[in-house]
Image (tube, rainbow, N blue to C red):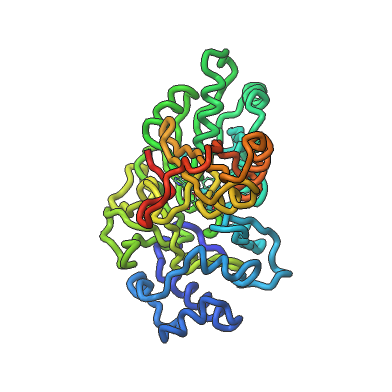
Length: 420
Ligand code: DLL
């Protein structure tokens, strides 16, 4: 893959559509599921000449990707794929995301660009406290910081006392983690000796977080706290990030971003909130064409004082589907239902309470034991449910097992999700 210099690419955005047309032709040649979608609408690659034309192409959803599990939406042979990540599915299986060597390079360069917007360089020590694994956070920041020549500390999440000790000993200047974990670190530091903490920047994302939490983290950690956005389906973090102006997130030139009304799928005006839809034009193994992120945001077109000319998006305000995010982990109500039904003695009646704790989404579950179960079985049910929720969602969501009949019944219109 020849990579054009980022500014050259901006100057010649027509080139993106040339690349996109050859990508669509490739999808037709290999019998990719998106080609069938285009055929249903009588669309061919030559119908895509510019951004306006893109609006008539079919959108894709997480459910499409899940329906092809494991390899159905891959656009390259398995032998060309050098990395797999995954993002949570609505039920059981995740969506697998594939990368060729060029894709990994492009992702790393994107992440380097995102962090470079706020001046991260070879003098920085980047503590990567995002999880490493199928989740894209850890590896994404790791590789991007590596491109910038920074010293990378791949510590992952957890063991907060050790994190803080290492952060001090090696003089980390940049912290990258979920805002929930940054809050944990900040709370841990409260009332303790902060000598030796040299942090100046934080890159926080993977879940929505408020301006109030930003102010708290900036004060508590002595940093500029920056928002970083991305999703596994579209490569991982690095789709967009804030610069030091904290004035919206600059969108990587490797994506064409649209914002649509989630009900009609019509494009909304710039500045108006809707669902973010992303198209990648140079990803090889797992291209996304008009992928519905379900994230609610708006496009910002007025120039940013930092001088970077890319379009920007607002911070993500929420989701247009029922996906919840608990400490950076995506959770669907169906996964919780499956976890509860996997424990004998529990009924299918449950409630998920969603509230905000210090500007972050917090979840708790109330379910109930069946009339046939015995009170003395509650301890065993609690142990089993803890395991079952963790297996099904990957998260340790707090729960309570209530008495038979105590969870309010649904009347067909109300939701299992109670927002406070
Ligand atoms: O969360 C990738 C990521 C890692 C982004 C590290 C930023 C930093 P997924 O696990 O696939 O990927 O979850 C993607 O998380 O559709 C949003 O709903 C939410 N999300 C991600 N970043 C933000 C953010 C990673 N900055 C889903 N603000 C997305 C609000 C975010 N929500």
